[in-house]
Amino acid sequence: AGGAGKKAKGKKKSAPKKAEGKKEVAKKKEEKKKAPPPPKKSTHKVGAVTEDHVLLLKCSRPLLQSRNSAVVLAVASMHFYLAPYAELPKVAAALVFALRTSHPAAQEVM
Image 1 (spheres, one colour):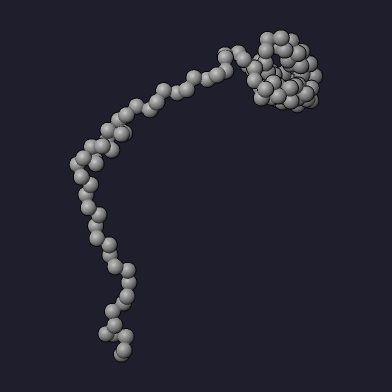
Image 2 (cartoon, one colour):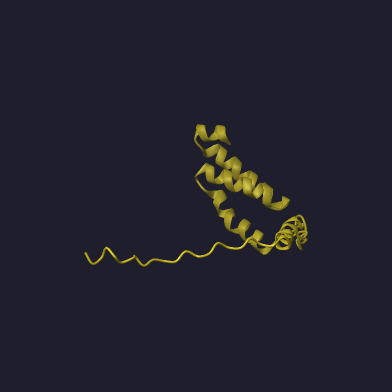
């Protein structure tokens, strides 16, 4: 009987936000239209080999000796695209070895 006359206390509704002025809206539209700055030029030359590049090639080279022909094929393709031209004969030799020793189904893929 005592609770019927009490009003529930709750959060007050906040007043609706005022609409932004026309100048502010126009300013935001102009900022969106501005073109982004041109990308910075890379300091690396095309064909240049970085330390990370050399490390990747050096650490993946032992995988050319893998018994899994899929691993040999994946590493060989990476070396084909990333390694200097002088290293490609090593990759070709590993592919030929994997081709000669692999299962006939794997030979079809290679």
